[in-house]
Image 1 (cartoon, rainbow, N blue to C red):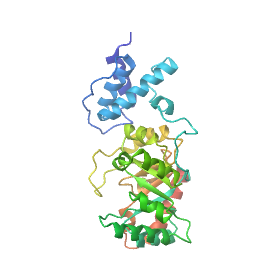
Image 2 (tube, rainbow, N blue to C red):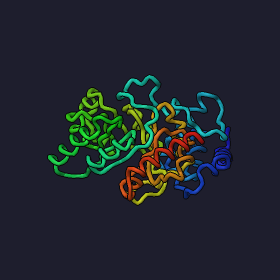
Image 3 (tube, one colour):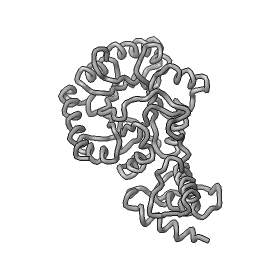
Image 4 (cartoon, rainbow, N blue to C red):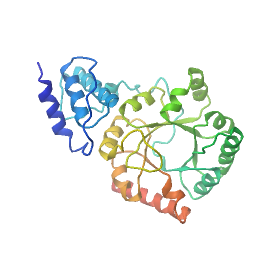
Length: 304
């Protein structure tokens, strides 16, 4: 019989450096009594993973133990099958997008979308916040027109019905927006041919996103950001690296407080895109900054 306490200590010892900087969390109530699961649940909580993420990793650790016959405390689980992700090719999947989306500019209105698309930014997102349905319709349609004649891929944040009608390339949804979709909505969205990007902030949300087979998965916030109030702590590069290995069959976008000086360490995790917001919108010369950031990605990608 395995000593779960000793095994948990071994897991923590092997992985503490990767996940440094997180305060220990209270372990959630266990849902099974297998030693490998119990040890991993305690270890993940000690390493700072919140309850539903600790549970997710512990279940994967148990699945791997059963699959391989070995607990392997030194190896963090990253096999998609151990997290019960869809096998490739996925039974449920949205239309594909490029594996490497490059610099990904998140922008407040159609004018900004047009400026950055003409500046050569490969992927742009319209994040237009309004309760006025007519204004939303106008802005989404204007953004679709703004990228015509450029090579930019345009994602629309939230407003998926208008995005379909306007002929956008894709949409981006948060977890709450994804959960709000009815089965009929999801079927209509997939049938439209639009690409789907989904925001995630940890293991449980990644597993939830995988169930619908999005075109890409966004992961963050990687670093602290003041752009909006985040319900979860910054994930850090260590966590980003293990997330990227698990989601290696998806295009991935890293987002949240990432500056040019951090591009190399972020791209070294294997993600193929970095999203920026304030770095462009607040720049004195946004077009020049876009060129500099794309160059920084190219250099950092070569170093990675």
